[in-house]
Amino acid sequence: MGDWPDLLQWPAMVVTVGAGVLVSSAHAQRRKLGFISFLLSNALWIAWGWHDGAYALIALQLCLCATNVRGLLKNDDVEGKQRG
Image (cartoon, rainbow, N blue to C red; front, side):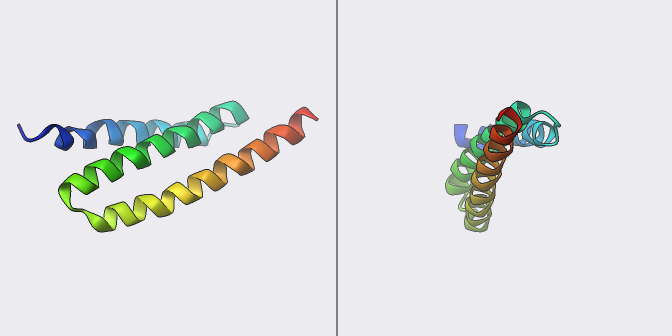
């Protein structure tokens, strides 16, 4: 068994898959939780990539982080319009 950072790829994978399920929901709250989960998975993948020297993966995760923040903000806009 390797270093503990090697184990980060498994929770990162699980969180990523769960987030994908949540963002496809018709319910704004579930989508919000999905985008937050994606942000957590971005952080986990970045930590794993840093440890492993996978700099392209880190760059990808930073780009995906930006799209997840955008999705979170757009979801909040939709959720606010549905309430008001």
